[in-house]
Image (cartoon, rainbow, N blue to C red; front, side):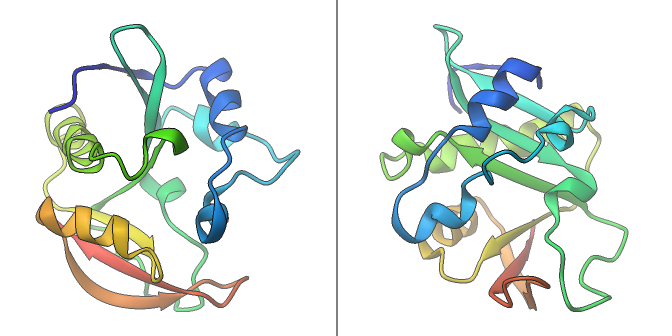
Length: 156
């Protein structure tokens, strides 16, 4: 597990997340400039801070963790949806698995989740491998309503 503190999302942390810039094809995860961070402040999101109280990443649960899909049956009600984001400078450094495991622990111990569902961009093999090492498995492919890009729904 990562050494850190999970706290409910705060406005200043949401603003920091909105300013993150992922490089290259991962820019799809960048926050649109000028868009609201309200979805991170609705009580469904948490921040992971390191021992120096610096933001490492965030977790978002429920409907906010879903993408707008063309397929109407993409998200049956049962599993808890989990979205997550690791600070860009920490990506690719081996923090992925412990970061995801912290989110799993939070969802099970604090939110009472049984099954956990997440959605990942089809091109993002790096994240998919991390999720698979944490026990998630692909259950279906869906299409983003706006970009028409392929996304994968994974279940744990």
